[in-house]
Amino acid sequence: MLQNLTHYTVSQLCSALKFPRSTYYKALVCVPANRQKEYAEFSQKVKEAYEDSMQRYGAVKICRTLNGSGTPCSIKRVQRHMAKQGLRSVVVKKYNHYANHGTVPDDKKNLLKRDFGTETINQKWCTDITYIHVQKEGWTYLASVMDLCSRKIIGYAYGTSMTAELAVEAVKNACLNARETKGIILHSDLGSQYTSQSFEKFLNSRGILHSFSRKGNPYDNACIESFHSVLKKEEIYLHNYQDSKEARRAIFEYIEGWYNRKRIHSAIGYMTPQQKEDEELKKAA
Image (cartoon, rainbow, N blue to C red):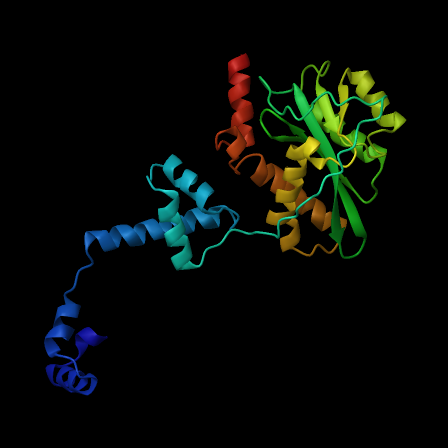
């Protein structure tokens, strides 16, 4: 619009605004410097990576993503561009747990002993149940099973009752991912679902060794606790589900469409759980 102004009009505007006409004409032919173009292009890449993560990634993971896609950058550079655009990852208040350093009952063994390291997949699993609130039915429950090598959620079950059957169903689904389950260590807490006869009977039928956390020690099962915390931070706390059907669909999309296949994980070298599992399967082939 300003480019179409007559010389007389320009003179009037410049006089009214009290700046030289030369400044106006210089602005008309001004071409952004290469550095300005590079800055704008990088800002756009940061925003695209942020949006691709559904606004879940912070500077560290965005930096990893950009480096992995061929755009060299540092965390501080990403932080500056995120701050300028007002981009922030979803966060929740950190909960400080003061553990009750209890013991495992004599008939329950802590086989894992916080050793989360493995040589390959299907050696050590962990499981737990978390609460999810929906509008119509109140509290609902998600039981999840994680492979500690790939950090992939290999089995889960969702329902309106926190029963032993729900816990068993999650492990049954996990077993579908393993050719041989004999000798796998499955770690859980001392909840009634995991100490029930039906749960122990199923594990025994598949040759799975049951390991238990000490009473009042969630850090003994830190990996699955961390997953449930991330699930709530990145999905559950951001939505109000009308019923369990809606929540079930959201959980499926989060686990299968995001967490397992797209979300990079620092504990496995910033790979996705699916990439880590595929890598281990190639090694074994």
